[in-house]
Image (cartoon, rainbow, N blue to C red; front, side):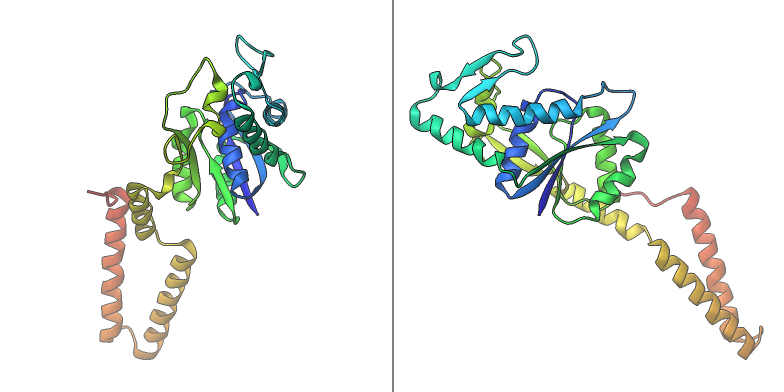
Length: 261
């Protein structure tokens, strides 16, 4: 089962609709609205946002567009004045498919300082899509960094390739957009630079468990050889030299870490 975890920083439901519909059409069965709780951004009423997104889908499935925020709040537009009968029927059917009982709608809040553990937990699950389409720029760097360190491979954004129509906002919703021509749902961690950066970190970072096991084995072999061969043996002298060299290298790497070109 695919699950969409979508970061939110605005209470306008239109911002999230395109990603949600796209993922539901790709078999997503759970939609989670996530807010990072922090003093740098205004809090979003998550339960109200969830309800408004669902209500917007219901309205569209009935051929109606409703404004939920802004100067036109609560204004209703009947889309039969905007579309012919065939196009309106397709529009209704598209959004009706997103209203099945098999889809779970929920909200989660995460403290800013717990963002990395939260993303790490997501990375351990299968079928997870993390969406940052509408996240505030305040958090985008943090989410990218956590995704890089925690090997998140499904970090998406809904990329609009056409100029939005602010006078008729329903024209910017997914029923009007042709995939590849008017929008792309882009995996941000599939870019060549991101992949290369991730590979470099993995190559330069030794897993903690491997380090512990390697150290224990090295010490055990050295002690065993010392008991059998004595301190004056050539083997022990070589091991001692290797240990000294590695210690010096480790000291310099702490203060002068390897950087990319």
